[in-house]
Image (tube, rainbow, N blue to C red; front, side, top):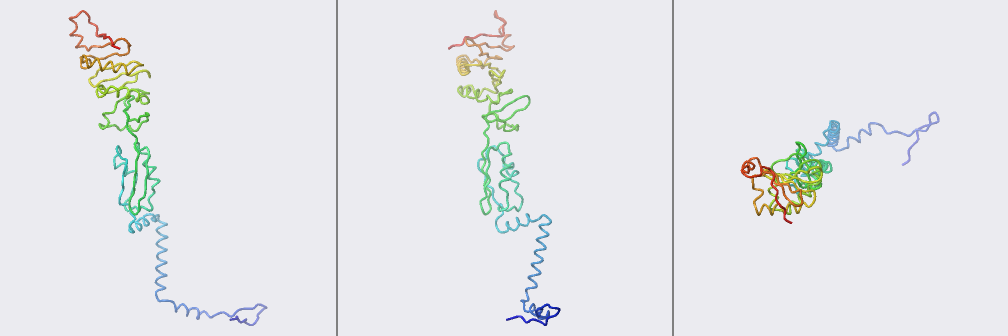
Length: 288
């Protein structure tokens, strides 16, 4: 249908326009619920804008997703030995009503990696409602003391934590600076004499060169710089034959290759005063 031109006025053609009352009449033909729907849509947009503007978008989204069955309901742990469960849960920072879909697994993994015992961690989402946490923990190898500080260390000598309790009493205590990096050499030597190992309370690195052992009964064993395995084997043999380490002595000096020097306690020395020698040192021949 062609539009009819109105009479020209001042050289400009104008189209006939439809009366406003006719357009209004068409609006009256819309369904009766249209107005309510438009009002609800406007209200929803207004509420949504207010939620976003007020910083509540995440909370509302979490609530909606949780209502749909995507809330975090279960946490599965694997690889956990030394770390307490509450430490893991604190690091995960799972808020009440949190949804699995919006949970930041990468940030949670970073927080777990900052726990002293954690070597590696992974955080997986298992839909619809489960977090799976896998931990690789550092393995405690020895205790290291320098000054008043005692730490749990790895086999490489790296400090895990200074939080030491009775659970780690079976670990060998190595003492002095540098001992943490060389703990493996004295532990390996003691592993070859299982009869002696449980009786050793601590190992002191002396002058960055050699070790002194402290037994549970207070006797000090002064080991040589070299041939530690042979010295320990001789010590065990003498103890088996004469009960050396059960005697009233203060120290056993194994540093000389051909003899062992035993230092007596004051009480043992008093008992020897009736003899010709009052020396606190007793020399024993080492057998090879």
